[in-house]
Length: 356
Image (cartoon, rainbow, N blue to C red; front, top):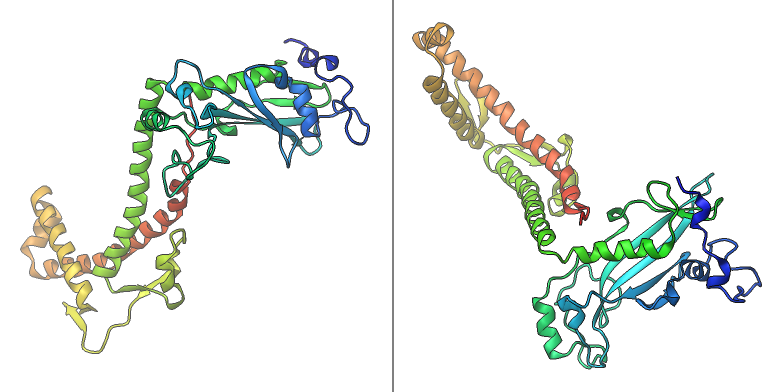
């Protein structure tokens, strides 16, 4: 394995007399944004633009243009600037407690000059700029951008782990091989650009459809189970939980449900088994369906033939089946509601790792 000292950057190459306001050497420790910028050395590389320090951490952000053979490179603004660029973030995190290892936080986002920050969700079209904005895209660029494929934003989880070994004063990759910041950023940029490829776009689209299907199964499944429980069985939410039906992320428990109280004269009987009129109809359908399935699929021998031939056993079997249906039906629906309510927020924030 190469020596970690190979990851050191010559100080004289990046700093020429720069001192922090307190007179300290900015490269003594990568604890300030300017120290990280100086150590990274990207400010002197022509492919990086607008290198700027972060306000709240030891790191910087910079921009890089998309490859000239992509439609994104042809997007211009009214002021003549390149309209869209790749936003790259490089942050040296704080040391892990009791350790000299610091993680490198890397991000690569699709940036529009007429929008500040990352576009996650917008009520309108993020490609539309405010009227009169000096960096608004030209009409031709607006049409081109609407047709062009957009790259996928990369977050920290989408890149292999890079670290800064504070004791050795070196950057390392996942194999503990020394590496300098420019190759790290170049690797991040190239992976971001690969998300423009056709093969990746197809895989990403298929994955997005599968994700959407999973979300709908969980969300609509819970809504359907809730509707069936309250429609076909005499079950209701306890009083202090009734307003939770409008809480998208509420996680239901079995104690949130109870048998509803029937009004006088609304009780029904099935061979002496008392139930509500609503549950009576539901349970009769369930018993009838199971009976038809048993008669159709199971062999008419032994116990089943004895039940068929004996009125008392037939009656007992029907009553038992009705009792089981009255217990198992609501239990299954309540179980489904409780389980799906715990999956609801998980699938809503379903995170996908970019493999490009």
